[in-house]
Amino acid sequence: MRTPLVAGNWKMHGNRASNRALLDAVVAGIAGLKAVECTVCVPFPYLGEVAATLASTPLTWGAQNLSEHKQGAYTGEVAAPMLADFGCKFVLVGHSERRQLYGETDAVVAAKFAAALTQGLTPILCLGETLAQREAGSTEEVVFGQLEAVFSMSRKEDFKGAVVAYEPVWAIGTGRTATPEQVQEVHSFLRTGLPQDTRLLYGGSVKKENAAALFALPDVDGGLIGGASLVAGDFIAIVKAAAEAAVARPQRKG
Ligand code: 13P
Image 1: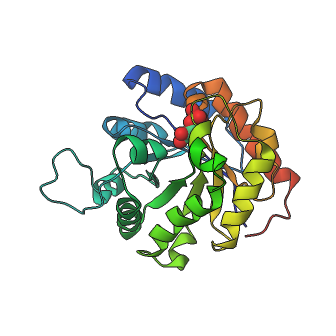
Image 2: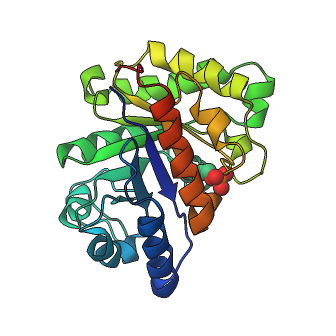
């Protein structure tokens, strides 16, 4: 059984006061929702406070990046054991902003995925094509290549507990959501290459208005939410949409 997951990616937003207000509202807003798992991936400096705020709640927390190295002379980097030390459950790996703005190659992403697993963290592997790649008809080739790179360093079984997030680059922060047909097409393609219990999230301009249609798709197991995860009411509505989709389809098996 694949329990749906809704993960907020705060990106480089927030401050101590706004984080607290946001989390208090989200915790209250999703109280009692059992059919869905909810997490927030927050900037490194806030991990300690977020951990303290969420410790006795159903929400879990995670980071947005990690080093591929375990420790050492890597100024400015944050290692997987440090994230585990702060009780992180999840860590984003290979977000398109990391790939595009910070030059993370498929090989680095694969090493980060493996580093997360060594510490018991659940990697959320992000992959997706650019607009040019989609228009060139190479979407499947691109996402398959990104997945293959990780398979070359980790075993396929390692994906059992992992999460894969399909985030078309052209849909991130643009307000342009992939259509349900486009999402289902890529997800069903990815599904064939992954263990049945790997959760497959969609990310890219998920909003409260489109969440229900996306989460109703057979191969979508939740979402990775950027901008809307910063607005308590919107995020709560998206988590509720995932819970309702799960209840509507109890037959979904891992
Ligand atoms: P938006 O939801 O703001 O488009 O961001 C998606 C994303 O990048 C989540 O990781």
